[in-house]
Image 1 (cartoon, helix red, strand yellow):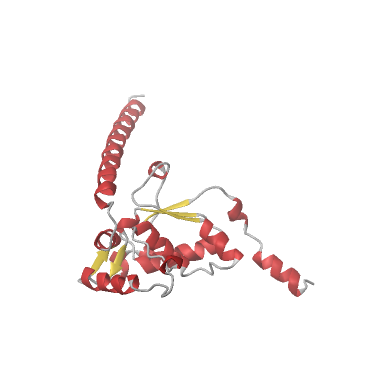
Image 2 (cartoon, rainbow, N blue to C red):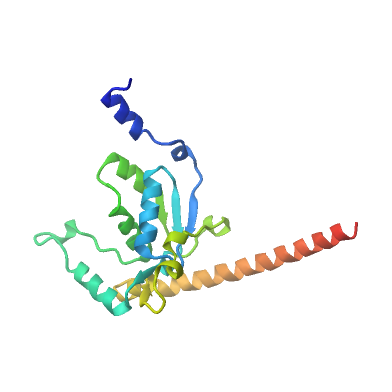
Length: 202
């Protein structure tokens, strides 16, 4: 029979997946911010390693005017005597998403700190994740969760209007990556067609 202390230690022991070096790469394009963050937070607490790319394409329900006013109210929250001590207002989409996940995790405990270390977020799709398979989360997709005709905005536009200055840079890098990916796909299809023709001629 396990004692209370032994049972507690057993419950808090990291699952086998925590020892794995593999990440689940999630493409944030077309996902709802809160729904995606809640799923990522849960997976991180379960010991899974998660990478979210293209955070600038994550969606928020509500028009840009409403979201911008909401964020401006958030920017006014600061420590009265020494604002340099926080709270810290992130402007980039990847950090906004990261902070949303942090709000769903007990980040001041050892378990929460370990969970947040398993979460990574990026604008665009940097190497080496640009060559890895990317997943989507159906429970968080905008087309499945937001009513038709409902207003929404992207994190890229919101961030651009509250002080993030790298939208054009990220867009330029993404255009280069997409061109490179399209060339690779065309070459791959050509090789597959030649292989199929060779097999058919046998």
